[in-house]
Amino acid sequence: QVQLVESGGGLVQAGGSLRLSCAASGRTFSNYDMGWFRQAPGKEREFVSGISWSGGNRYYADSVKGRFAISRDNAKNTVYLQMSSLKPEDTAVYFCAAKGRGVIHYEYWGQGTQVTVSS
Image (cartoon, rainbow, N blue to C red; front, side, top):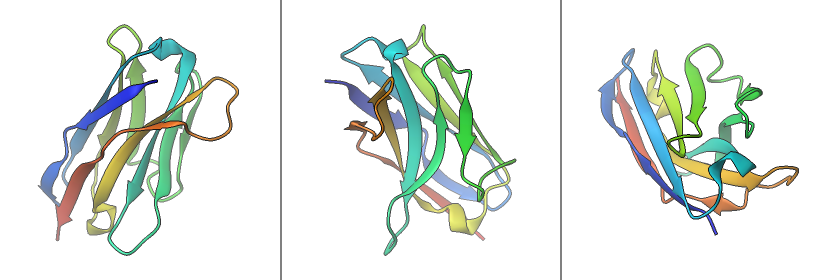
């Protein structure tokens, strides 16, 4: 089992920045690809960004490309999502997720952290 705990959410004005963190425990962190997802009210959960176990590959949804940056620190068992130029449509609950190397679907999920962007 992998336990994931997100932090760093909050209320920010449009154009502002936030950095989300996700602390992992329970298994060897570097064995897992990590991802960030979000779910806005009344909408389905959507992929935001992903990073491979080594950090060598990073992926972004088109809606956040150029504004968000994912990174990880395997020594600290933590993955980050730096969010800049935030828009009201970025408002959502943001979830951290983990999957083992070679696994297709994300297996472990955090409880989520709320991000609210005011206009």
